[in-house]
Length: 190
Image (cartoon, rainbow, N blue to C red; front, side):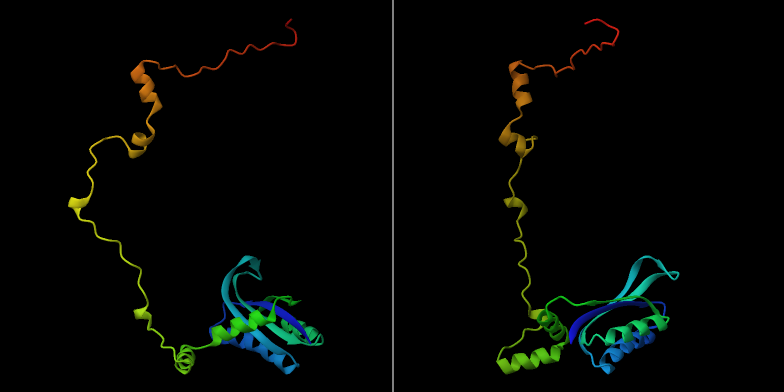
C-alpha cells in the first residue's frame, strides 16, 4: 500500500449538504476499495485563478490516504463521471505521515477531552479569562514630563547642523555647478 494525496475542487454554488455529500462520496470510495484515510482537510471556498466552466469560485478539499494502485483508476473515473467536480489531482504523497497524523489528532481533539486529560494528569487548566494579560504601560503624570524649550529637533542638537556652523563662520560655499561640456561633431577638427 502506498500513500496518495488527492485534491479536488467542487462547484461551490451548491448548498453545504451537497458539498458534504461530494466530499463524503470520495472518502467512502477510498474506504470501500481497500484504502484507509489518514487525513482530510476541507480547505473551503476559494477564488479560482481563472474561470473554469463559468465559475470563479470553488470548494477545495485535500485527502491523504493509503491505498493500492488499483484504487487510482476507480477514483479517476468517479471524478470524470460526476459533474460537480471541477478539477482534481491525485499524486503520490511524499510528506511525513507521522506529522500529518499528529496534526489530525490535535485538531480532532475536543476541549472536553483536553480537560479530562488535564484532570487525569493532575494539571488544572486555566479558563481563558484567567490567562495572563499584557502589562499596561505606566501612567506618567503631566507634571513629571520633561519640558522642551528649544525649537530644534533632538537629532540636530546631538549631531549639529554643519551648514549652520559654516554660515556662522562666513565660510559658505556655493553649490557645485555642472561643468561646461562642448560637443564636437565629426566634421569639426580637434
